[in-house]
Length: 115
Image (cartoon, rainbow, N blue to C red; front, side):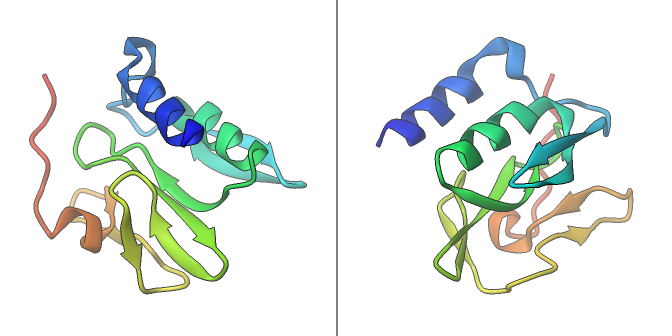
């Protein structure tokens, strides 16, 4: 699928490294402004432009795996890990340091800090 290949290209591009800080930006998508991690806002805009309705996302901030939750006819799935999320809201949990993650994707394990 073309979109999946483009996501992989985007992830491989050195300009699109995950941010270590929690920089966000307001981005206009589907008629409203949404707060997104700055480093993945262009990817989220791209997905929505091509008809993939994203409902939540996080770059992982070099601590967790990037996650992008999309709505496929009422079924929610992380399109990065390809794991189904059985909740319809409150996808993310907050760790003790204030970082958000999705338990189904992370399996409760912290990702090693990138060098």
